[in-house]
Length: 295
Image: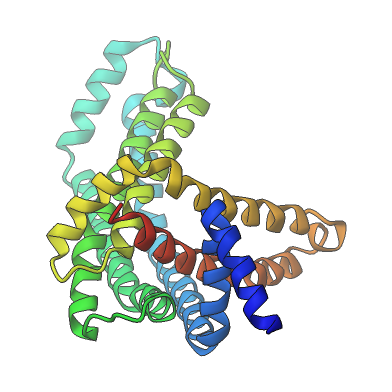
């Protein structure tokens, strides 16, 4: 009798406040499917470790080539940063630099390693992050696509958003370099950073919606992510606000002196607090999109 009254009370609140219903539904699903939540957290952790090691190794490989490029640029332009007002000297130096076979070899090696890093990180993403999203899918949804179809869709649906993120990153680096070497930059570094952070957030706002859509057609999911993302922005934004609030709370906790004064403890605490929230975020996003996609 008491359980029946509580259930009706929750249903009434859910009708009046959809976000309450989504939070209650997500929490209930996680309580039932907690082994999948643990697997999701483990997959995220493995992705962070593997991607971190990979990027660190490639950075060490790149260092000597980047150092050589900077040294050659300084020698052939007479110190680029110090002679920006001598445009003729800089121009001649840059032409000579571009014609140098040694310089071209270093540049080609740098781009080869960067390309390798981009591909390798995406492969790690396609393995570990797929498992994390699939676990959230199992927790939040009774209807399930076959594992292989889900994996194929995850890769195809992730790829455009991943490539866009890479593009934004390279454009930002290119613009920041242009500003550093310009006598009168028309835009500041802070502004550029805010612009590219905004572009990345917008990209993955639609990207996360796309990854929560479960049609058999990856193209249909991709197309619907933009339709739903625009039409149901204010409804989906409510769930995002909850997620953002949780991240803000984590940030405030990590600012406590016991963590702030110990980088290793801060890192460990950050992982322990951050990964469960990420796993919960996926579940509530699956629930949210499932509720609003057919309205």
